View 1: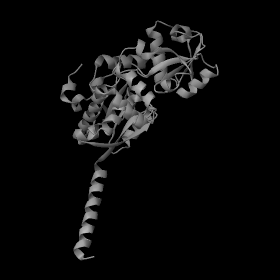
View 2 (view 1 turned 135 degrees about the vertical axis):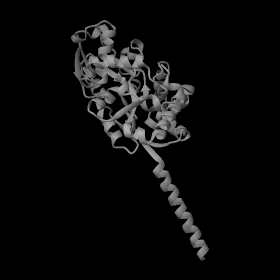
View 3 (view 1 turned 45 degrees about the vertical axis):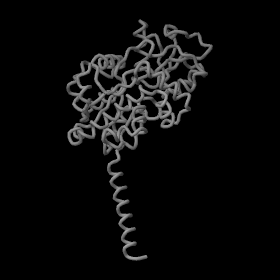
View 4 (view 1 turned 180 degrees about the vertical axis):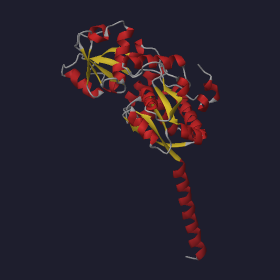
Length: 326
């Protein structure tokens, strides 16, 4: 082989290595609570699959998932791209702990995926029937307990007359239900769809509870200051993913099924169930929906007193048309 050929091949290899290194350097990973187990993450799955993040100016190549709460916040803080979607309670807790985080967009605005189920032959047919009985929740002060208390209050029922048993998880709660340790159990999609032939729904949260802010996008103030363009691109890419969901639910279900390893029929039903209540927000803030969630969090003692949103929220990274939307 002549020297020109050697140099030519060496040059090609060098260019290839440079290109790969550049791509790796530009690739970004963010955090999303309950990734792969809840539909919170659907817009991110759609945006990655359809190249919508790249179109917005950022290459999101991976999602770091967690069981929620403080774990998602810790993952976010340890990331090179410290942006994540977390439950609003986790964002508030981080702020109370003195972490320098800021809320920059809304993620989800519905509790439509939550329900209360019982056994098919149970004498529990309405929420009123759990009075004097035991109900499985996942953990004290968790979302499942909060929604149960909110539903009871909405129906004018006395929550002190309902025994709330912490099971440690939704599947554990179902085991307790099957063994007769409780009369009903809290549940969440898509698990409620996967196992719908085994249980009977007592009440679906979407039937009695109004929209409320359930998850938000957060970042560190330092990242927002140093990389405003990246932050705007993440929010814009996610928004494009939300728009794509509502424009084509069937295609969305295929992507969600692939990303979350769900049976196609289950993914289709899960996505369709969230279309009506418009679970996914484009990112804009609704003061009414924020306040509804704060009111709900007070029921479990997660919030005391008033919340100063001016110290927590920064709308400046939203697309212009969403900044003043109410």
